[in-house]
View 1: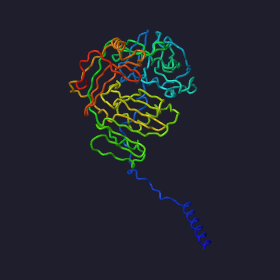
View 2: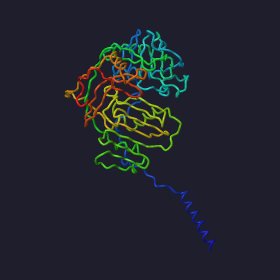
View 3: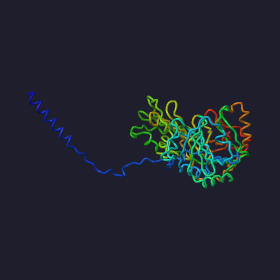
Length: 447
């Protein structure tokens, strides 16, 4: 009996093994019409559209002129020429002062960046045989200058935090540089007052450029549309069938699966996605800017104009902030109590996106309403007045100031968006609205 049972088991095993080896699935072409393509929120954009200068400063004979804001076409033209050129003969300079960068009468064009950039962002600009004199993750730069040395163009990447300069030469045509310098005579460029912010004991101090005369910016009204949060689900939840669909009644909406969730605020203004990691590795990824851009761009997440304004690789992972732009000016303030409608924030942990927060609306793609009686130009104080206000303020210490610029305050009421320009000072990573002198002309409803 045992032999019979053993024989049956051996024969059965052989038959199953043979069937496994010879199994061929019935394959067929997938019906293309049955493939559900993931809908994007908007068109994708180039990296240069979200990583670039906040404004450009022209230097001549120890005087300077600054652009009013970053939406001007010629800024893009200058940036294109710079980023399509090659750099060489790079040298790292330490312990240098203002005279090496600013105190000369040579013609200069300066890019003022809203956030420091790592060297990994400029690898494509280097000549093929050019090696970096410093490790990529040990140097970030806040300004980029091109200097006319009478036939050759010197380039400088300036790090005020590290008190270092990475200096070399760029192969841009000198005629192109001189043509760009002529832009300082245009109506979109203002003669500027220069001041230095930050610690005054540093040899290399960060300059800020403020218009010498009062400036005017429009206060605008737009209509807006809520984005379709369902379009985000295929990108944020790999197993779409496991997502629990929220009740569409009153209150916030919560989409969730076993390990992640997406929350939409009660009024549909804000989206928060969380994919918490149990353990966070100590290793930091310096590619957070490129990774965050690729993640947002994959689903067309840059629904309006945005620009990189902050990033870091410390704490519980890496993060990047892309700030909303309106008519070339950054939105630095909103009326939201809990949410930051002004920016897209991405956090990465263990090489995966662990947090994604963003406004849940976008501006309609048309011009501001022409029949809006509140839409008008708003005059802002000149640079000297702004500096005097900062110095006299009880809430601001000039040594702690990181930047001063014009930005928009935004309020969304129903489907309407109102933006009003103000002067702001940056301190400890936050933008603080200044008094801005005369408050007449302020949009109603924006107290």
